[in-house]
Amino acid sequence: MNIPETVLFATITAFAYFSVLFVVAIIIKDNSILDIAWGPSFIVVSWVVLIINADFGARQLLVAALVTVWGLRLGIRIFRRNKGRGEDPRYVKFREEWGEWFVLRGYFQLFLFQGFILMLNVTPVLLIMSGIRETLVWSDYIGLAIWVIGFLFETIGDHQLDTFLKDPANRGTIIDRGLWQYTRHPNYFGEATMWWGIFVIALNQPWGWIGVIGPLVITGMLLFVSGIPMTEKLMEKTPGWDEYKRTTSVFIPWFKKRARGT
Image: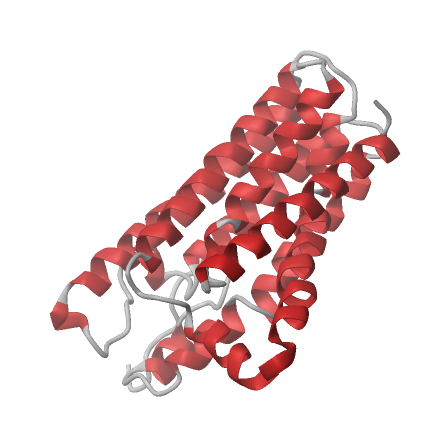
């Protein structure tokens, strides 16, 4: 299957996925399932186009496995985090602000917009799935190594954060240990790094360089839109935040700056 056909089937799949998800959200009156279903949406799209292409090359199976591991871990973590908490305050606020237009705006601005972002993020995967079937080469292993580094940063960073938050003694304080002493957002850094790894694997395919759209979009979203800006806004009033922000790299891991007075 060529690239345009692969993109077409991926788009149809994404549209159907988020449309069904929207109906479920209306029935249960909880749009938080959008967050839970974000990671799994990549799994569904990746495997649909892989199966439709009906030729399971080593590179295609590798990337499908990487996306599956990432998507399942993310979906399960958010499900556990949200369980029993009701609808996320962000969506509650949208209900209040949008009023009678909430259903219509929710469908287009939340669900279908997520589908649009998904299609941009998954670009390198689609190029791989529609590309040449061959044995893995050295650049595939470089991409895999980059992905593993990202996965470790995201997984370990999330685990350290969850452990920190479970301790009542840490309430109202800043986590500045483990990976969090080198970057204020090791989990976000890890997520972006994984997609840069998949992009490196896509470079082995025809037109693979176009796959840079994926990691650029997800990195941009994390740095400037829904990731770091929203998280740091919530932390602004936490004691010690200003000093932590001054001494710790925002994204790329690096050694801490000296604290004032030292």
